[in-house]
Length: 431
Image (cartoon, rainbow, N blue to C red; front, side, top):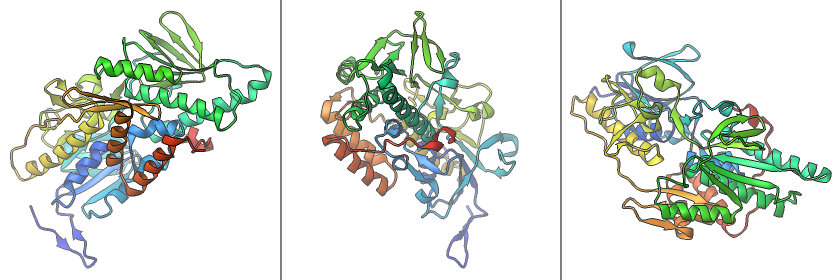
C-alpha cells in the first residue's frame, strides 16, 4: 500500500488509501472499526445515530433503572484518537454494488473499496396483526425511552383513577428469552418501587406483569436447571408466567391469544424474536435464516469480493449451522472482519471465522442472574449476578458510563434510590 503524506497539522493525508465503509455503529461495526484503527485504510462509519448504544442494558433504561446517557456513547468520541476513522451521520437508502457506492437518504453518495454491513437486528413480529404498530420492542434507545414513558404514564394514570375504583393494570411481555426475562423482572421491581418509594396508590392484586411464551420453558438456550431457577425467581417477584400461549393479535390496549382470550393491557412489550433490517434485503436477494445476510466462512457476502456482513445482520456459519445473534458474536466477527479486509487488500489469503463461546447470561430482578458457562456449567443467584455485572461493565464503552452504572448498581443493590423515573415529553417523537 502507498504511504500517506503528513499535513502541516500533523495528520496523515489518507485520500490515497483504500476506503472501507461500515454501515452501523453497533457492537459489530465499532469492533470492526477498532480493528482497522491506525491501519493503512480510510474508514467511514455510517449510522442514523451519532452514538453507540449498549443494547444489553436497554431494558434498564426502559424500566427507569438507568439514564439513556448511561448506555450511549458518541461514535466520534470513541475514535477521536484515530485519524483514519471517520463518521457520517445519515441513513442508507441504497447500496449499489456494481458501482461500489452507498447512497444516503439525502441523495449524497459515498464510494467504497470495501463495504461492511453491520446493521444489527430489529424486532420480528411474524406478521401478527397489530404487533408492529402497538407492541413495544426494545432494540434502540428510542424504544427504551418510549417504553419508559408508557410504563410511568400507565402507573400515574392508575394512581389518578384510584379514587374512582381500581381497575386491572396488565403489562404483558411476549417472549421468554433473556430480554423477556430481564424486562419482566425489572417491570415487577419498578411497580413495587413506585408503590413503596413514590406513594402511588396501586392495587398490587390488580397490577399484573405477565410473561407469555409459546415455548414450554424460559431461556431455552440455557440448561433446564437455569430455566427452572429463572421461573422461580420471577414468580417470587410477582411475575405470572404462561407457557404455550400463542399471540394472534395486538390491539392498542389489548392482546388476543389463540385460545380466544382477550386481555386488556397497559403495555405489550415485544421480545419474541429478531430479524435483519431492510438493508439486508437490498444487498442480497436470497437471505439466510431470520432474514440475515448469507456470508462465506471469512464473512464475505456470498457472491461478492468486497462486501462483508457481520454481527446480527449476518448468518455466520458455525459448527451448529449458524452463530447465535449475541453481542459476543458481533464483537468477535467485527474484529475478524477487520483482519480479513486487511488480508484481502494485501492479496493475502483470508481465514474462516470461528466463534469462541464465552457463555450467555440473563438477570432476574436486582439481585439474581443465571449464567451458562462455555462448557455447560451454570452459575445462579448472587454469584451469577456479580458475574453479569462484571462482564457488562467490562464491555460498556466510556469510563464515565462505567463509573455511573457501577455506582447506580451498587446503590440499588442495597436500596433502590429515587432514580430516573422521568416522563420525558419528547420520547414519543424520538427516532
